[in-house]
Amino acid sequence: MPIPFIATLAALLYLVATGLQLLNMLQRRKHISRPLIALCVAALACHAIVAWDSIASGTGLHLGFYKISALIFLATNILCLASILLRRPLQNLLLIIFPLSALAVLVSTFGPQTHIQGGSQSPGLLAHIGSSVLAYAVLCLAAIQAALVAIQDYQLRHRHPGGIVRLLPPLQLMETMLFELLWAGVILLTLAIASGFIFVDDLFAQHLVHKTALTIVAWITFTTLLWGHYQLGWRSQTAVRFTLAGFLALMLAFFGSKLVLELILN
Image 1: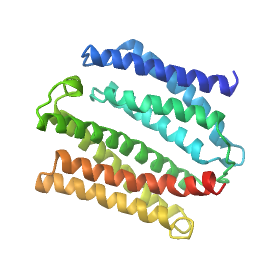
Image 2: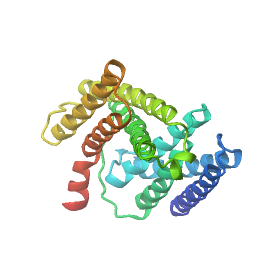
Image 3: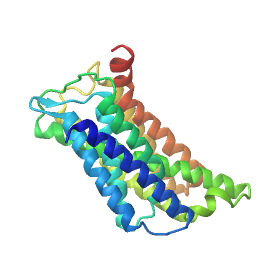
């Protein structure tokens, strides 16, 4: 089948899955349904085909802005679904990441092509790229979870227990899931930074220095939060602020230069 058709099918499956999860949420179902799992797997399969076709080539990897975005959302979705199947209550995150994934897969297929090619990569460099993508995916889930925790905490503090609060798991469980995601993300980010120093020729070269600096800032922010949580009892709004600040630094590290060089300066 042609890639444009598969990309469109992936987007439609993501949107249908979003609607089904919204229905499950309104009906207060605690576990993901089998029809939703089937939709998720089908959407991920189509998404994977599109991502592989757009990124892989005989001469290396194409890592343009839209293509890497689609790859990161694919990794995010796979990790989220795997966590849900392991009985982690993260299914409400699908309401946010699936519509964004539908947009990402469509734009990577039908949007402007920047033709950025990375050349051939060594196994070590591929390990660095892979750990970086996985770290970003997990910390993206953590940032979305933090946003939900912020909304839930605000409504509880202002004694508005209706609306979204009654549809979410208890706040304590939401915070537990947030810190589990942060731990996993920091471990992967540590591996990404370490592999970068080992396998990338010069992480402080002019075209990489801002990425390296912002990634280290993000790592320091996340590790400070984890230390503060276990040593000083930081939670709720403090955890939200640190998580979102760290993810903002990481997002600028991943996409800042690509946005300017590929889309603005072309």
